[in-house]
Length: 168
Image (cartoon, rainbow, N blue to C red; front, side, top):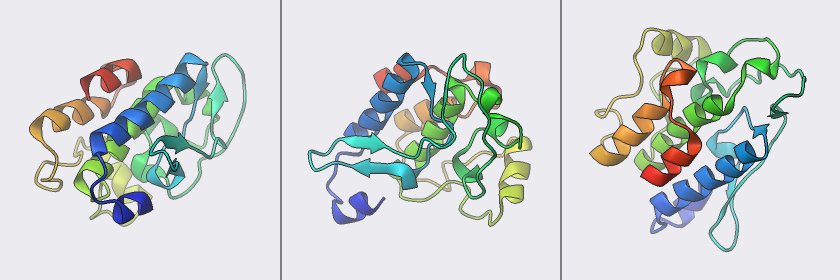
């Protein structure tokens, strides 16, 4: 988000496509990131997005265990909230996170900004109260429809990353 503060003229859709393509590449290589959030995305000198912090990532088909990292609930899929192993995380978990990161980038406001705790965010999501257009009025209707699809509570309701990138 520092990049956007210093570069207000940046093409936000191009930036989101770069982040989406980076996630798509990871998924094609069998890697689930598991903790996508604005603070681990950097913009290279050439304007391309790079994703960092693979502490919760896993390779599909391999067992591994990590614990939930506090403070990332705001961008995490519901299946990531458990203290269980990363086996619950899938590519759809990354798609959910991407939708919330995209919302933050397009609106300039973090999702669930009125919620001060992870517990409050979790209660809101479990009650089906996702971010609203009124809270993020800078987002166009077309982009809202795309990112809203990423927030399906159930993984099967979320699009695949290639579809999200194509729709942007």
